[in-house]
Amino acid sequence: HICTLLRRILDKEGIRATDEALQAIARAAEGGVRDAESILDQLVSYCGDEITFKDVFDVLGLVDWEVLHGLCDAIDAKDIGRQLQIVEDVVADGKDLAQFVQDVLRYFRNLLVCKTGGAKELLALPEDEIAKMQERARRYTLTGLIRLVEQFAELTKGFDSQIAQRIAIETLLIRISKRAVEMSA
Image: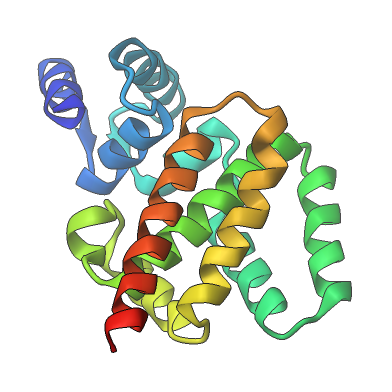
């Protein structure tokens, strides 16, 4: 419903935005209407009359998906050098590491969603992004992904964030369901 509200504001101003961009704003605002509106203001002053998914990433200082895909590939390949280089690049770009951990956590949570089905309904992402995520999700076992999510969630314990709590609950629920399936098999 935040997307509808944002769309209404933009229509009044005569500004175009992709659905993915609006969904990215809503996600970044974690459901807060005022936060979403203030993000939208920043974007309008930055972009002018058209807002894209990439603009949202740039303006919010979020880490580019390609960086997260790279980290995912490096973890999969157990390439520690590459993993450390990615962290180094993120720091060199002036990104906040607490935010980076949140981004990584959200990324692996999205892989988990891809792995358990329902990606299209649950992930408000462009089609090509979902395809990339699904391809990566296939390389991991469900338990491997759950472990990764838990480990990154553990890192955010110091951050008092809703997303970390939510993901911890989601992961627990998936694990419980999974165990039930294994026991009945």
